[in-house]
Length: 171
Image 1: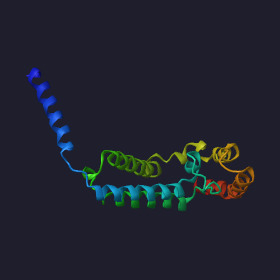
Image 2 (image 1 turned 180 degrees about the vertical axis):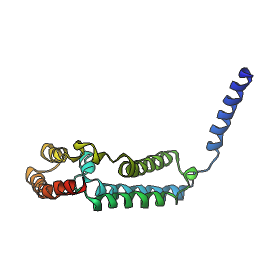
Image 3 (image 1 turned 45 degrees about the horizontal axis):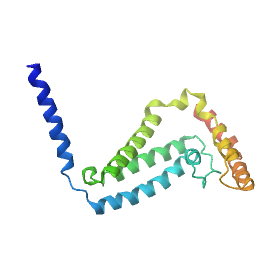
Image 4 (image 1 turned 60 degrees about the vertical axis):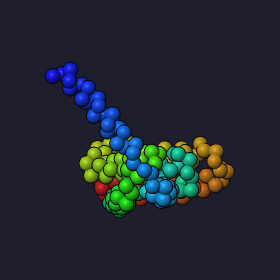
């Protein structure tokens, strides 16, 4: 029986692999998804400006997100709205690259929801409240003049008291 089971599984896998290759890419849907991705990334950086700075997008360097209930709600609202938006795209009709991007976006959004609702690391991990990394990126960067970077640094730094006040209230 075992000798027969292995070839059956192998044939089943080959058939399932070929099944996906028969679907046709909808070029119009694919273009729409490309536009969606551009907007998604722009909005993602607004929710996670520290991450944006870390990957080279410095337009939001002056923003320090205060980790309060409003920030959590904004992050959850963003994730849920984007997951709803993904429902408008039939993944089977997207190009292979966009299928991968679709899954990466979906995983990122589901991970954010899990982090807030289940993991809750802000409740038990004090490293969550270390703001130094965001400031180090500004100081050590060579992407703009020192004056411009210091101005962003100063604006961001002005939000530190509110940042730590929020952490005390939340936890």
